[in-house]
Length: 89
Image (cartoon, rainbow, N blue to C red; front, top):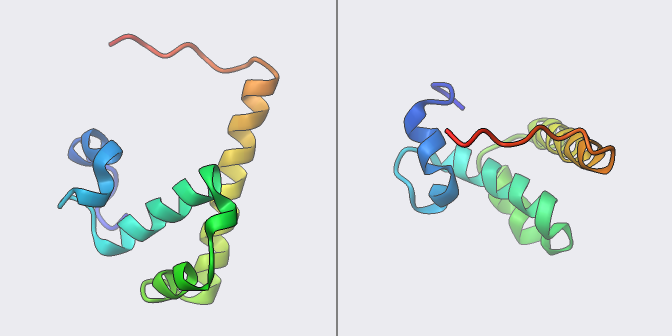
């Protein structure tokens, strides 16, 4: 993210696709993460063309590796029951 993760972006994360606070590059990266977590079988050539409009092949691999690492880490925490309770603030 070009300017870091601002409070405005955190507040808009659930509606990132329609939010003006995210750049097109950020939106496609978030969409990639969402697809990797929820529907990786739907990632097709058309989606990779959309990624390549914003990222090089090396950047796509790096982004995919980071997404996969965080998904795996989150699942491990859940399996080992190490997730911290969400603060109600």
